[in-house]
Length: 147
Image (cartoon, rainbow, N blue to C red; front, side, top):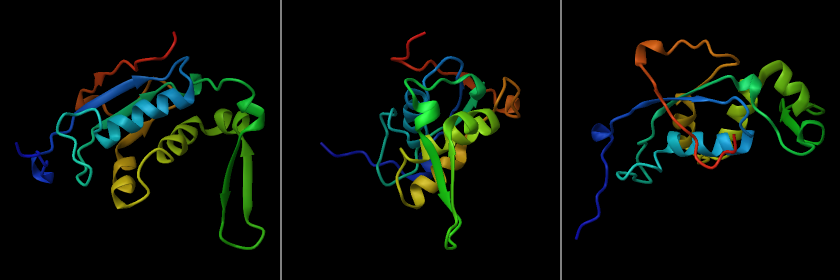
């Protein structure tokens, strides 16, 4: 029996839409990372980008459990001495909640060219309005999330 290896030309991408209302950030990010990397497909091949497109709406209504809003920080560095910037997640969720989701998902993808390509297929929006109606995304139900 031979192992099936997908070829980049054979990959068929689907569009998924996920409503992030009342979902924990980490659980949502895990589901999005699985869709972007294609791990849920039977034709998954580690060295081929076989993931789908994901549209996430209502990121303003995501939740963080415990004391993460005050104790967890988003940090980035400009590259210059003294260039460390940090912001707690309460401020980040109020100002730019799609960025919070994108940072969480990016940390779950591969740290190479494949992961950088996969993160470009994530589209996150603060509210229910999005620009991908023409692609006719199909609703995706995240499993294991309490409602």
